[in-house]
Each structure stands twice: as C-alpha cells, then as structure tokens.
Image 1: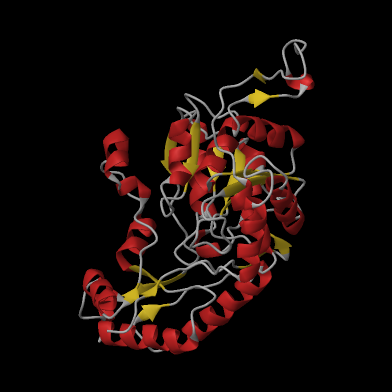
Image 2: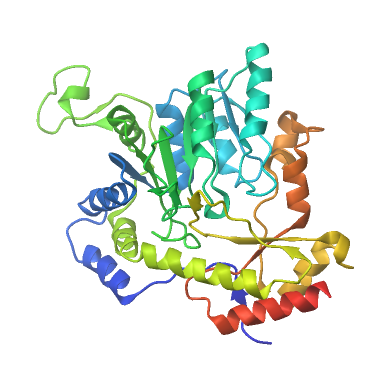
Length: 388
C-alpha cells in the first residue's frame, strides 16, 4: 500500500532548524529574548497592541478567562463543535459552561442562536460573563454580530482562533481584537504555524496583557510597581497571584518566529488546495465547505459532510475505508456536550441539533501546505471509491 497521507503535518525548513540551533548555542533556553520577539512578531502581524506567549492554546484560554475575572458562579458559553479546551477553560476557573448551537453553513457559533439564548438567560438572571466563539477550520465567526450582542448584554469575548492565524475578517487580520477582548492562537504541529507545542493570547488591553503575563509565570513578579511592599534587595521577587507554569521556551519561540515568515504563503497554499478540492469533489455526494464572503479563512481544516441519503454506506464505513486506503482522515469534532465528562456534569439529555447533525456527517480530509496535487488526487480517488 502507498504511504499514509496524514490529515495534517508540519513543515520544518533549514531556516527553522537554524533558528532553534541558534537558541541551543545561546545563553538562554527559556526566558530569554526569543519569546518577546515572537510576541512582537505575532502582535504586529495581527495589528494587536499586546501578545502573551504560553505553552499551549489551552493555557492561553485559561489565563484569558482568569484575567477577565471568570470565577465560581460565573458562566462561559462556547460552541459545541470545538476541541474540549474551549469549554474546559471555564471549569478550570470554577465557572459553569453552556453551549450555543452552530450555523449549518459556517459550522461556527450561530449569532441568531446566541441572541435567542441571551434573551432567555436575561429573563432567568443567568447571562454569561464570557462567550468564546470558535473560528472552526479557520473560517472567521460573525464577530461584529457577537460584539453588538456583547455591548447589549454585558459579556466579554475571547476569540478561539486556534485554527485561524493568517485569516482575515472584513479585510482585517484575525487577532486584531477589534471585536473581542482577547484572541487565542494555537501552534500545535498540525496548525498553520508551529512551535511544537505552544499558544498565544493577543489583546489591545495593557491591563489584560499584564495580568495574563503574571498568571503564566506562577503569579511572580520582579516589578516593584506590582509588589505589595518595598523589595528587600535586587534579588527580590514576590508572588502576588496564584499563577501557573505556562511559559513558552525560547526554543519554541524561535521556531514560531521563523515559521511566521512563511505564514501568508502557507495560508495561500491551503486556499489553493481547498479550491482544488472544491473542483475535484464536484458531483460527489458530499457537501464541501462554504466560505463566507466577509472572511478569508486560515484554512486549517477541510471538512466535508457526507450526503447520507445519497450514499449506501454510513459515515463509519466511509471513514474506515479511507483509512484502509492510507488516507489519514480525521474528525473535528465530537460535540463537547456529548463527552462522558460533560454528560456526568449535567448535559445528559441536552441537545444541540445542528451540532449533532454536523457530527453525524463530517470528515476532515488531508490539508497541509506540503500536500502535493498527486496526493490530493489520491485522496479524491479514494473518497470516490468509499462513497460508491
């Protein structure tokens, strides 16, 4: 059998290797100059005032929630079609989680469903403190609509842009925080650019940036302006908050800063492959991704939906046949509210129909910059066999 084509894969160049080796030969492996450089690079690209590099997007979500004051008795709402971290970050803070169903075309949180849920929540005095829209697959959410609702109902917004760096919304970079308090990125190896593991929170608020920076490093500061009393000497530090060890190393940051030099090329290549998939899949019993004209997707994932009434096989059979042919398809995502942990904390019998319909039909096809057209042809030929 031909080699397996994965659903996603990093590209590491000679420049990336040289950047990491340069750090290995330097005086600092962590807490040196590279993490601040990477922060400035990302903030500048996005048009945001501040960036805080951390060891994962999950960590970025956590410190963003804490910086925004999320705590016991508060509520966070997010999409059910996301990785569990988008919801778990609320539980880490002792807060409550709920979900808002998705739009059947974009697969992102539906603004109309959010508005209906907010109207009901206002009546029962159970409005959320934070809403986390997720730019699924890299496609930007309708952030202007969410921002308008935030002004009306008083909640804060964290954009989960783990899939979306390099994308644009209404002509402006995702991450400029025009419509949100914080935007979070992921740099896992299958993402658009990688630091091996890593994440970042960007914001236009100096106060939020300072708070997130403090929380990522044990809540410890050497800044006399943040201390509760005068330092004893030049060695002195104080723990002024209960923080975490969420720092990004200089090795990771050097890799990320190098990869950022190719970000636009990576996203453009993904768009080329997506348009080619659109064309090659025409006529098959699948629904290809719809892309909103107001946005330019980061195109992290290419998700098809099986038109099950036109296919003799069920989704599992199609999925397993593709895997058997060496196509490393995946599924993004299992609805969070159906996970056993969430069922056990109160979501048993709770339904989000659009999310569940999406899950019953979705398959993620291979999508990464080094995917060749010959490999893409093989993916499409294998899918044709699997659905016939």
